Every structure is written in structure tokens, then in C-alpha cells.
Length: 584
Image 1 (cartoon, rainbow, N blue to C red):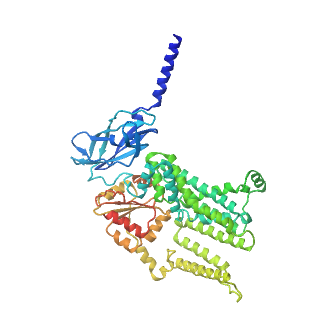
Image 2 (image 1 turned 60 degrees about the vertical axis):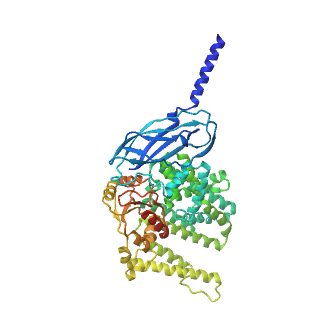
Image 3 (image 1 turned 90 degrees about the horizontal axis):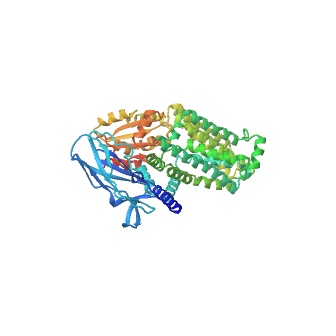
């Protein structure tokens, strides 16, 4: 009797343990449906870890006579040699299926769908087909002014998000590392090179190969950690955190840090920790004595957050994926890998700097002063988007004229001067003339550093009048009202004063004569999200954007043209191709 009781108890616990091993099908496979537009539905499944769905088992039926469903469009799945059905195509983690709708009635339609799917667990159990009913409201195609967020799945950032969604973990990381390499010489990263070089130059005689590598690695890891953390937080909260830091006070404070660092390069003072704290840290640090490794790490973190807040397509794609799925682990890892790719050239600079910079002597002082000037240039570049253009031009003029004087631009050379002396004097003369042109142009009314003397021939007025005739939109309601009244294609440009790529688009792309001619047939709208207020965030969220630059195109009925979004900077030739796709 006792043995039978023990056996029954053992059997009961075994059954309970087995029951806990497999999920209820409603938990393992969670369906959802949303309307992409008035004629397209997206039916998605969230699939639990260790479970999968069969592609050929999906069935979708609409109840009633108001509409019927067309042929579903499935994403590519993974091949599996299944014990029950042989070689099949299955989906892990998630799947989203686009289903066209053939309407038999106008206006807004309330549909009930019966969605059938069948799946199994990797552990060995298969479920019978499940057919839950899902309700969805399909908007009127004639009145819906804009597609909801995520409609840009066919553009570059949407394609990247889809790749991240369906690729394997390590494949995604490799793709984003390569994307980071591609971004390494963009405005997102280039200003960091003088910062890192200045840090290494400040090490003087201790700048060896190994030390340059470790300093650069600490800097890049700080940058990568910040990108990953800011990216995950941005995806989960639906906003780009760095945009909140793009205001005159924050940028001015960070620029002041670079000014302080540059003055130490010029020998005005020595920046170092108190002697007692230095001694304590030197006892506990390895290769990076004096605790400088931590300082370099923190400098890299701050540089990534403030110097490089651009939203390029790879970053936008990762943020879009995080925002849609909440998979912060994969999204954050992808951003970390992308930042490592962006930092690879910086590590090369660190290693080369450790060996190429002079160890001692007067050359070392010259190198330090050169990097001091580069740090000042970075400070001016930082605050240029948030200060008056005349102030930026005057700052660039001073930054060119004063170093030119130190390069003996105004001093006669002795007859015995060698080649290098003459070379540097030539560089000084070019800097002096360029700085003088900027100074005269600023005082004459020019506000374009690339054409400082245009104001002397009336070019400033012409440039001002040549700006594209954008109409401002300040909220989602304003945008909807404007789109409802259009009768030709529309271009909506997301802009911010602190967005360097936005200003590049205005100066180089929108000013191109071919681009201006092509845009003559468009209604041009501009959403200025500089303040990052509630209306600005709502406008960005409407289209699944995380910050500027971003350009959305609409057809003459006010509906977004899928797959033609522009995220990040595009030169004139690339933008003309985007306009061709929008017109086609």
C-alpha cells in the first residue's frame, strides 16, 4: 500500500512537471492584426522561445460579405527537417504576413477575421490547428490621409529593421558592424578623431603602440556602451534621447570642455588629478596609470552622446525594430556592434598615434598645439547649429587667422629656409586668406561659411530668396488637415536646428538646381522638431521616426508612398533617385 501511494505521488509530480514543460497554444502563439492602410492588413504572431509555426498551415478568412482577402505575402522562413511533415518552412520568434483586402463596400469597415495556424515545440509536441477570431477596423482608402507608423517598411531603415527581425543573432551583429564601418567617416564619427588624437598626444613620451591601442579601445568602448544604452532607451520610449541634449546649454557646456582641454594643449596649465588621488589610482591601475583609462572611457561616452547624435539608416532601423518588438537585447547588441564598427578607424588612429607622434622634443610641442587647434575646431563645430551664423563665421575666422600667425604667415623667411619651413608658411598664408575672407564676409552680411564673399555681390540675398518654399506643420492635426487638401505629391521634411545632417541637406542637396526643378511639382512641408516638445514627438511617432533628418513622401491623395522614405543625409544624385521612385 505504501509503495502504491509513493508511485501515485511520483506519477502525479511527473504529470505536473510534464504539464509545466509545454505552454498553452494561446500563450505559445499570440496573434494580432492591424490595418496598414484601407486595403492592406498585417497579421502577426509572437512566437515563444522554443516554438515554431508552419508556413503552409496559415489560413485567413474574413467573415461577412463586406470584404474578401487576397493572396497573403509571407516573409522568408527557415527550412526545417520536421519529424511530422518532412522538409518544411517554419517561423521562429515572430512572423508578420501582409494580406490584401478586396473591398465590397466603401467607408470604414469593421472586419472579423478567422486566422488559422499550426505549430510545434522543439521539445517534441505538436498542437492541433488553432483558429482564433480577431477584430480589426479598416479605414476608408479615400479619406485616410497618411499611413500609420511603420508604413515605410520598404525604405532603407525599414528594410534594415526587417533584416534584423528575421536574421540570426550573430548575422545581425555582423551586418551592423559593417554598417558602422560605413558610418565611420560621416559627421557622426569624424569629429571624434581630433578628440581621441588630442588625448593620445597629451600622453607625451608614454604614447607607445600598446598605450595608444588601450586608450583608443577605452574611448571606443565608452562610445559603444553609450550608443547601445541610448539606442535601447530610445527604442523602448519612442524618442531619441540625444535629441533632448541638443540645446545651447548642453552643447555650450561640452564645447567648453573641449576649450579647456585645448588650452592645456597650448601649455597654459596642466590638467591633472590631485597628487594624493593620483598616487592612490596609480597603485590600482595597470597600463593606464593615473586612472586615465576611466577618463578616456567617459570622454568616449560623452562624445558619442553629444558629438554624434545623427540618425542614419542603420541606427533608425535598429531603433525601429526595438520599438516594434521590444527586443532590447538584440537591438542593443546590434547598436553596440555598429558603434564598434564606427570606432574601428579610431582604434587605428590610436595605434598609429602611439607610434607616429614624436616622443620628446620640440616636435611634440608642435603636435600638441596642432591638436589643441583641432579641439577648438570641434568646439566651434559643436555650437555652430545653435548659435547665430555670424557668430560661427567669426569663430571660424579667428580659428584660422590666429594659428596662421603662429605659422609665420606674416613673417619673412630667411634665404636659408628649408622646404618644410616654406611649406608650413604656405599653409599659414592659405589659412590667413581664408580666415580674412570669412571675417570680411561675416561683416558684409554673408552667412554661408562656404561662400563668405557672396554678400559682396548680392549673393546673400539671392541665396535667401532661393530657399525652397516649405510650409511649416506643427502638429499631427495640422499635417492631416494639410494632406486632406492637397492635389499633388507632398514632401514632408523633418528638421531640427541641432541636426547637422539636416543643414547639409539644405545647403548641398536642396540647393542643387536639378533637385529644385524636380521639387517644383511638390507641395513642400517642414516639421521643425528642434524643441522636441509633445507635438514634435507625436509627429515623429506618427511615422515611426526617432529623430531628424527624415523625409516622407505622399501621393496626391495624401497617402504615404511606401518604400521611398529618406532617413539620414543623401547627396543630390541619391536624392534625385529617391524623387524618381516617389514620382513613379
